[in-house]
Length: 408
Image 1 (cartoon, rainbow, N blue to C red):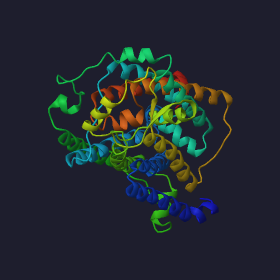
Image 2: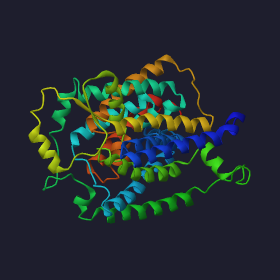
Image 3: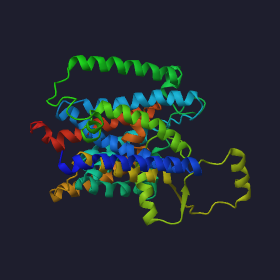
Image 4: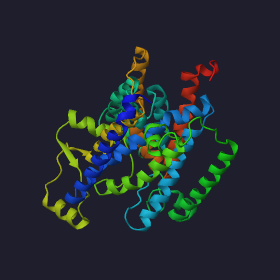
């Protein structure tokens, strides 16, 4: 650690903590719970950066380096989130919102997304937190992402996306197909079973790979300083993000969006603030059904070109995700604006367009569809996960490993 970081880590931590607490206090006092997206996004970026937990590398490293640590970190996020969501749902504080099984969207979008994240060097959240680290290729990918999303939701691929959405499989009552509807077991029981399975797997993994002794003893550096300035193991970040996802669900639901963590549409909505008008700004929970019915009667028919919705919760989350990652990298002295080969930067830009389009077709990315969607036990999001992993492995094999001709 540099001398500057050694001297400043306490002040950076103090300012960050105070700023987040101020946002929570203001939200509580004013009822503008959308402001709680600021600490949620900040902590999300901080945790991701600490473990370098990107979906692209989590999948690619499984075949490039035979390293499953980051993938295990994603699994930990999902299981911890499940258990948390089960508790919040039992208390009546959230309403579970699993995604429908639009299988064609998940397959087509997952393949495009899986290829794109390799070319861009990161998934959507990966490009966001790596931008906070100063990665120029991730910045190029981040510029391309909203272009790909917009092409699907508002542009030339909109009709194709609508066509794919016809292929949907629901339960007999029209609800989304979930692990619960398939097995007949309630959500909370399944969450408990997944939790027990995760603990057993963690025990097996620990026995298979015993920890290595460290050259730095715990007494040499204070615990808080180590936590804030050193890298984390993926499973550690996984626990932190899983807990954060529960607070994110409460914060998001109070801000007009009944869903936990997600970033894809936040990137698009941030772009729409600059490029589009008029916009419908969503920053609070919706009115009650009775109020909504009265408003529908009182208001005239919708115009032919209604204003596009932008969620301020998502916008604040993604903006402060970058800020949190920057702070984490600053504490660890990892911010480096290194020059990149031009061809890599151009590839990352077009990879960003492709992964943005794939995420839009599939209705989410690693965060929205895998971390959150699988945690909500959406069957369709498991299909998306499989499509993404297989496409990622194929692209990694040919693009990064030379079709097996290069040594991993």
